[in-house]
Length: 349
Image (cartoon, rainbow, N blue to C red; front, side, top):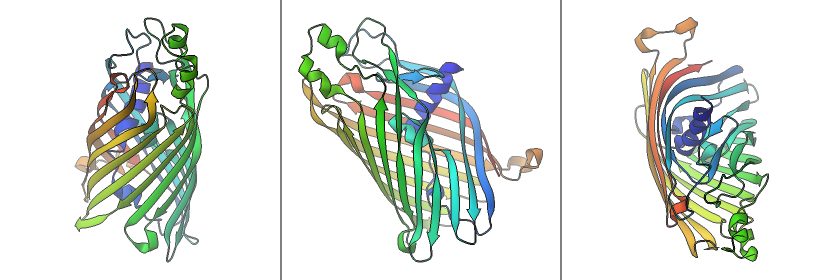
C-alpha cells in the first residue's frame, strides 16, 4: 500500500487534467450560505514509466538503480488507492466563497498540492479568485538522477505559490487562470556522479539544476452545444524558469474537453496534445531537449444508482475513469508514459 499510494498521486496527477470536467471550472457561487464540498474514494490500476521521480513518504515509483543514462525508464505497475477532497463555505449575501482542498491535477508538476483561497462574484466582471497553493506531501526526487550502477539517493521537492483566476469574464464563457510557484529541491546534486567520473565538466553541472520558478497561464472558452452539454477548447502555457539552463523550458498544450452532466449520468472526455522546448543544449547528451506530449482520458459517473442513498446521503455517485499520457522526448532518458484506470465512490455534502 505504501508503494501504491505514491503511484496514485504521481500517475493520477499527470493525467487527472484529462478527467476534469469544465462544468467544475465554471461552477457558480451558490445562492444560499453554508458549506458544500465532496470526498472521492476509490482504487484501481496504474502503469508508470519515469526516470526522474523517486517517490515520497508513501513509497517508491522510480528505479533506485539504473544501468545507463542513455536508456529509457523501466515501467512499474501496481494496484492503487484514490482520494481527493474539496470543501467550500459561501456567504451568499456578499457573493463570497472560501474554499480549500486537493488540486491533484497540479501534480503534473510532481507536487501533491492543496489550495486555499477565496472567490468573489462581481455583477459586471464575473468571478475573481485568489488562492495560496502549496505542497502537502513533498515529492522525493533523486539527488543526482544520473548515477549509474549504484543506488541513487532521494531528496525532497516542494513548491508553493499563488493562483489567480478570472471566471465568466465580463459575464462571458471565457476563463483565464494563472499559477506561480517557487520550486525547491532540498539537496540538488545533479551531475555530481558524472563530474567525479570525468564524464562531465564541472562548469557544466549547473546547467542541470532543477530549482527555480514556474508559471502557468491557461485560457478556456465554453460552448453550450446542447442540453447539459459543453465543449471547451483550452490553451495552456507553462514556463519553468529553472536555475539550470538545460532544464529551463516552455510548454504549450492544447486540450479539448467534452462534458455531459445529465440528471442520472455524467461523462467527461478529454484529449491533449502539446510540446515542450528546452532553453539550452543538455551538456550530458550534447543536444537540446524537446518533448512531444499527448494524452486522452474519460470519466463517467452514475448518480444515486438504483436509488441508493447510503446513510441518507443524497449526493452519492459511482465513478470510473481511464487515462493515458505520454511525453515523448528526443532524449530517451527523459521519456514519460502513464496509464491509469480507477473506480470508486463520490460523496457530496
